[in-house]
Image (cartoon, rainbow, N blue to C red):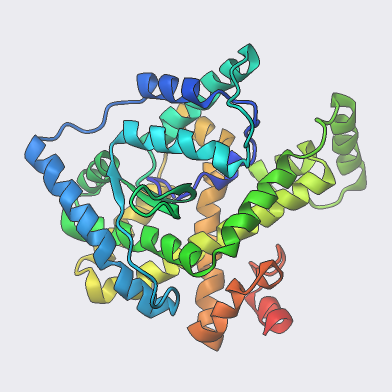
Length: 354
């Protein structure tokens, strides 16, 4: 969950090359990342304690509403600062990319590391929380770590002028939903890794091949997706774009489901939830300066906002029509996930799957 939209840098990750020196990326990111809001030691420690407690407390209501992960242990969350998030992200990327070779150290990898470091620096100030299914929990040695970035949460709650305790718990509801999704359905992690591998597979297309796709698209007059998604459609091979669409549909489902759960749990457990939701949505869609807008577009964050909106509308309608128990059929396998044409037509998914 981030200040404009969640977790996960799914959109940006698929575009990253595997040959990256992640130690360089982490070092660069920590040097150029903006400092967080100024807080006293007391405020910092209080926020950390509150977030850690809220992450545990949110698990029960989320499991009750979703009907998922019942009986599994309730893990703790890691509350980190921006540097801590950068370290965690740079350590998890090789695992996510299924890169089991020796760490890349050549000049090309270092240059890519500098570029990736710039992206991590920007994201480190935007991410509120993130569930990382690829990293190992240091407490249990099992995969899956929930990260909460305390300075970013404090910064946003101040800007929105909302009740800190309510906002922190509200953020935890979203991120804990992601943890529940992956804990109850371990196959999703492997599906994500395989899809990312498909994105990175194959030789780079030549400029001539890309230009040929652009020319064919213009000549055919066929409708094409707008924005970043349309650009990916032109730049990627058909096989890579199919993998990109699979990743996009999964991300849209995960984010929409988490937003649905937040709104289902919120009225009972978060006294000021209406104020928080209104202020947060206004922030998501509010104006940004040109540089921020450019960066957001380049790393896919604008497309991610659409994931929240489209995904939540899909989940809301399906749950309203068939109930949460039947909706949970969606977590059975890759074949029961929504197809691109079904996200905006939930009845089509109900007809095909249920």
